[in-house]
Amino acid sequence: MSKVHDGIIGLCVGDALGVPVEFLMRQTLRNKPLTDMIGYGTHSQPAGTWSDDSSLVFCLMESAVEFPELDLYDIAERFVNWMEKSVWTPHGVVFDIGNATAFAIERYKDMMIRPDLAGGTSLQSNGNGSLMRILPLAYWLRSRAASERMELVSKVSSITHGHPISKIACVIYVELAIHLIDGLPLEDSLIKMRETVLELYKDEKEHNLNPFKRVLKGNLAEVPEEEIASSGYVVDTLEASLWCLLTTSSYSEAVLRAVNLGEDTDTTGAVTGGLAGLIYGEDTIPAHWISQLVRLGDIQELCQRFEESIGVTE
View 1 (spheres, helix red, strand yellow):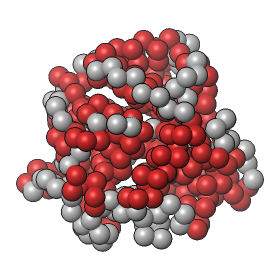
View 2 (view 1 turned 90 degrees about the vertical axis):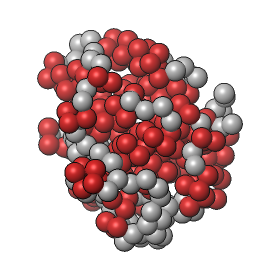
View 3 (view 1 turned 45 degrees about the vertical axis):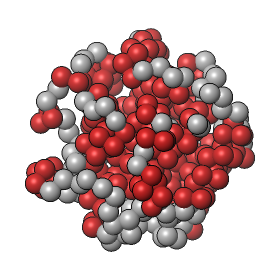
View 4 (view 1 turned 45 degrees about the horizontal axis):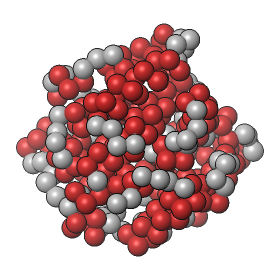
């Protein structure tokens, strides 16, 4: 089986599960939890429709196919083409886009600013818009030194989200995903990720690392659900996704738990789904969920091209 398909299909399915119930509060979903792939709802989209989360993942993957050495300008241009020309959208229209992402893409395009300087750098600019699309870098940069990965992941995050908290969240996610791609269990992968990240950021300002205390030094599995937030704040999304993985034992259970936390359901589903796909494998994802994905053939073909281009090995 393909580790690329495991993670990317896992991410896209989690995204599509969350789209119809995005912005619903947790209590609403507790009273009527999502149990299957459905359509319409919040964005009035057919079942299997994925959001900007997956669109930007696909843009990043296509750039890797064309520029294996990572070209920030090409990635940024593909983001522009997605937002303005609806490239890599499920139905030919952009129906969901975060404010920070839209602002950064417009800033890059209109001001001709360097891509890695386009993203917002204020504390309020720490939405989850770069975390949701960062998974392809775990495959792409897997063979690089950790310090080089940190630098490149930070630059790709900064195209839309340039604050240190957003960049650190993306580095944490990529480092964890790499160990899962290598076949390590989740708990072992978390230990290795923590060791690497704490070493990489040993000189980082304390106020940028403090938000990650529970991820890097705590025991998220023991945190009660009421203390797990599921907003669009990047740390909330990272914590919620890891909590869902640590408190479940299958792909379906993990992503449904993520979506049923409410609020930013598509992104929590996508971020959880990418890692859950790596942990459990594509063959554990319900076939009727995968078969409903819009443009499934295009996604599978892109996964194949991406895998061949960057030379992913099992």
